[in-house]
Length: 163
Image (cartoon, rainbow, N blue to C red; front, side):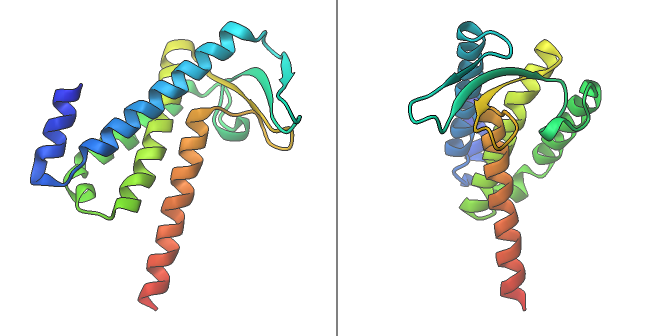
């Protein structure tokens, strides 16, 4: 995997290795945190963390965000693989983009891969971070949302620069 990452980084010398490593670390953190949640929580169990702002609540999500596309696992797997394939096809163009754009893509793709692993392995996504005013989520979801927000912000900023 690191040899592949280094080849990708060496392509046109765009310093992609750091983003590949960051993405891999996010996926590892996501999978490790899900493993810990499954090992230490019962399904549906909720444990308050100090301050009662965050809870750990183990749920299995058969859909995407907010439960949309529930039980459409094959569709969600195909969609994720399609996005990954598109990024691979356009990797040279992406490598020439701004650091913030590459960071947004890294966060989003790493999160997508973390949840893809669950969908392929289990048929559902493990969620466990609970803030009570939002559906239960996981580390991968944080990456996806953070990356999409960054990409959306860049899109708006670029649009304002053209007017």
